[in-house]
Length: 178
Image (cartoon, rainbow, N blue to C red):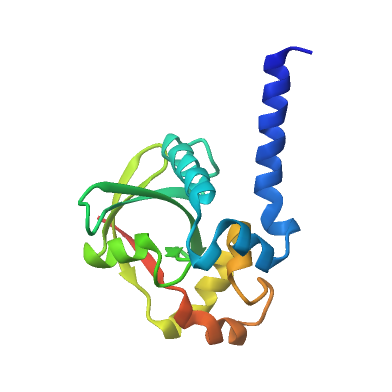
């Protein structure tokens, strides 16, 4: 067997294992492995960065985009890969890590100015959704984002009342094209 083929199979196998971990590991194990203390560790940051670059190129499915914001402290461009939730004709971004996610802080500091990148760049303004309106968006988000499920204490099939109880923990932003 060719060493290149073997290397390719190992990389493919590792990717499959990583992408299926949210479904196979218990929630607490997954969070402890990749997001100790609610923040991504070095491995998760590298994997998320790679996924964001693939989103920029348009390689990943269209529901995954790279959000480009200006760093609130550094002033440099920051990329993060996110899943777009769609409810009706509106598009939304949800923070699976809650209020303290860097991209949420950057968006708030820039008054919602951002860009979505997926093969092309779309300048957008992100408007924060009030807590009272978040439940159906969170439910739609969990239907589309299997990697986010370990970060939520409710099942993707739970009734909207359950999502109302946790809505304050997860910021949601409506995407407005500019």
